[in-house]
Length: 280
Image (cartoon, rainbow, N blue to C red; front, side, top):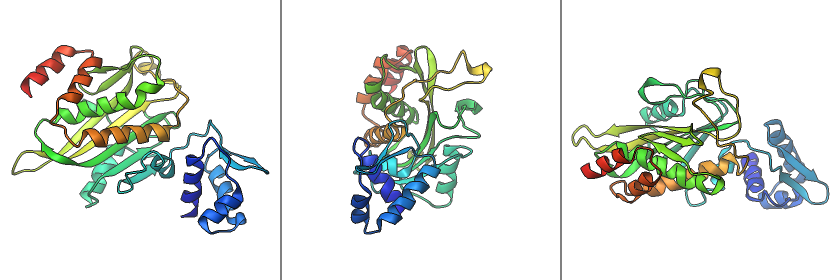
């Protein structure tokens, strides 16, 4: 699809303008067709700068979540199915609906906003548009698993790894599924597993991650609890790509205790982590 091809080219060249002729030649279309796609992308909210002499470039402030933008940061994961929604009830719910409909394999669901974001113990996760990342990775585990906590622990480590280069202070991990920054919750993780009834082992994981990335206004009842990372760059597409890369690597061997040592380093409750390690 020309729209996706042009958007991916712009995402790949954020620091450099790409001429309309170069895009036309690359995709075998007319410059007028490229111009129409550029206007379509602008109508969708992408901030695209244009210079008659140099071509088109995404503005540094342009931060629209898209499959094309995410795939730039997942070059070796073309087999991963990706679906991006402007608004959805819950990315975890959508992943389960698709799995129930027979849409197996590895799947990434991302939304700009959720109307019924879910947390653990029936809690909700406030999910306004334009400022956060709300994503679910539905994945076949490389090896069946009997300790469900490892799915969440590995996800927390993946988020810390992905975000660490962009923060001035360290993230802190609250057992078992919350991530704090500057003493406020900025991320929640909701993991669900599909278990083989004969073996009792978890064979498929559905991992939901909600992150408050950009500055945002919270409802009064959340202002003393919830916070944001407050970072304006990199793009949310890049952050999603980096988290997924870390997740897929970690989920190749969830039986390892190496990532649990990483979790312990950032943990707010080290005794609980050591207790879990003792049972492993």
